[in-house]
Length: 166
Image 1 (cartoon, helix red, strand yellow):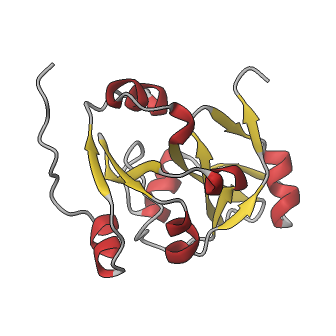
Image 2: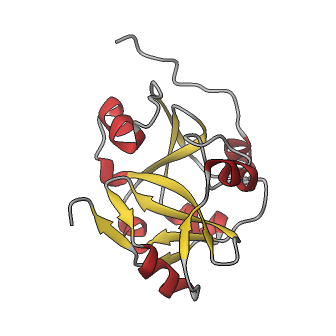
C-alpha cells in the first residue's frame, strides 16, 4: 500500500491547536465508511485503546455534548448520565451531530467545534502517555498528550467505559 503524505492541510482543529502552542503529530490513513477506530488503528499499527473516538451525544433536553472514549470501548449511557447529572444520554443523529460540531461524521474532532460543547473524557484516557484523536477530517488523526484534552478543551473526566464484549 503506498504511503500517504504525512501532511494534511489545516483544519479548524489543527489551527486551534497551533494557536494554543500544542505540539501534535499527524497520522493519515485510508478512511473506510463504518470502519471506525478498528480500521484506523489497524492501518496505523497502533493499539486501538489509544485511539480516542469523539462521540456527539445529547441529554434528555436534546443539548449536545461530546464524549471522548477509547476506541475499543463503548459508552455506558446510564453511567454517563449519572456522572453528568442528566436523566438520560443518547447518541445524536448524524445530522444533529454535524450541526453541533461543524464536522462531518467520521471526521469529528473535539477541537474547534461549531458550537461550544461540554466535553467529557473517559478518565482512563488521561492516564495514557499519548493518544490519537480525530484532527477534523475523515482519514486524519492527530497524536497528542491526553492532558491537552483538559488544558485546551476543559474536558471533565468520567467513568463510563464498557469494554467490548463485556
